[in-house]
Length: 250
View 1 (cartoon, rainbow, N blue to C red):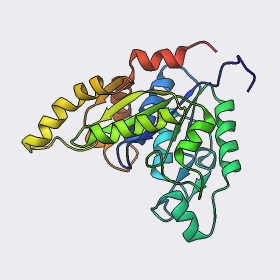
View 2: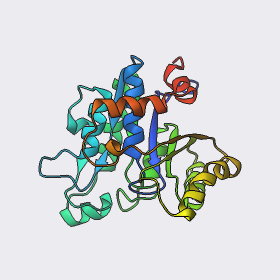
View 3: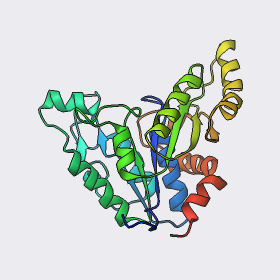
View 4: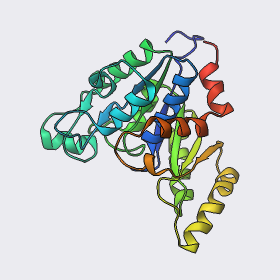
């Protein structure tokens, strides 16, 4: 990249773990972009546990939310049947991930759209190849990172570790989004952690807490949510931090 040139616009969505709601957040941001009239591209570069159709549920979510005309194979160029980390699934299938092909596919999607949302798989150090992780992909693409974290007990440690490791590698962490991926707990200890964790993270983290997404049943499963649920999700995510990124001049 030419020194002084502005980088392509977009975000990389990662999480503190698997199942924290990265797809929910990525789809919600895509819906905000679409409603704002932005040409948005979406990617889930690698997916595992993919059904016989060859299209993962996450890919369908992202395509629906963004309204993209891009084919599923462009949104998710690398897929595996086994529900494992990509490197483990690749070893079982004897079909290794080509790092160069993966990186080029992401870069092409970023070039072809005004704003591109790339969703990772698992957490930062999930292995994609024997020597490359999700964090390596983040650093290669040089997109700002949004960390999705759980609201419940344990999130202080997991979130701090994720933010610290990403920043140590040179990634720009835009902030943390807390996602209520589970129904409200009846346990007093869980409720106490949910009430106090946001403020604790605001005090302890070197990056902002961008918001808290409430639990929504239609967004908690693998099925593609109805348009009404996507509109509600976009409403919760349509905040100044995001609109400033989307509307920032090139």
